[in-house]
Image (cartoon, rainbow, N blue to C red; front, side, top):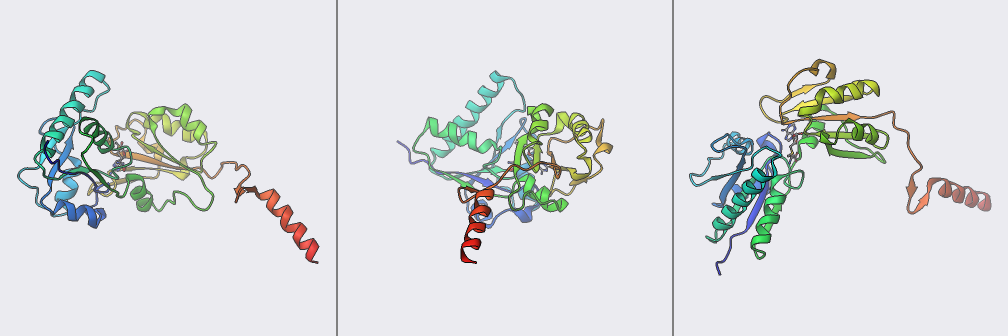
Length: 266
Ligand SMILES: C[S@@+](CC[C@H](N)C(=O)[O-])C[C@H]1O[C@@H](n2cnc3c(N)ncnc32)[C@H](O)[C@@H]1O
């Protein structure tokens, strides 16, 4: 049985190479073989472009894995099987592999699924995930928006659940991060308009990349074709809060106890 190399998922952050962690950088420079995702054969890889902008030379033996952007189950299954089989084949050489991940590798990333399928094929393969800066953390920093403070609630969802679900979440969450907004931009804007949240929301495209775009006036986006690498941050100051529990007791109970203690000690 071959001694398999380790499979490493290296988060590269969402676009600015300055946000690549030292750990990821060290692994990229260590002679580990690189794998990077593309949507079609010979297409450019966004993850690879982050590293290239950071000034690292792309090794000659870096290899692409194809993950098509389709909902066709048959095409997807075949592509995933091919990608996993190739990964296992390379790991069987005994050399570690680093899979380049845009954003954070544990957040809506191809890496989690790839690692799972590889481990199904070869359970003894060791997997390491290097955490990183997610697109929405960078977008919050870039726009000056705070995602959550104190007891605020934060939801992160792919917008594909539709405006009905987003509408419902806005009853419960102080901040809603919407990823993969591309096909739904107009509908989301209409919803935010209806809820009076246009002024507290913003759209961010390709955060950290040289062509990053931040749009505060969301109405101007109507009818526009958004890039796949775009998201919305929705702040919801109108949310009505329920009662908070602190240390397993409700705030009301805690206040009542404090009052009793104060009366007793008076
Ligand atoms: C498959 S998810 C990948 C998420 C990524 N792993 C992360 O940590 O942010 C792709 C979605 O993330 C968001 N996204 C990823 N990179 C982005 C970027 N540089 N700028 C804006 N949004 C981005 C977009 O909503 C995009 O549709």
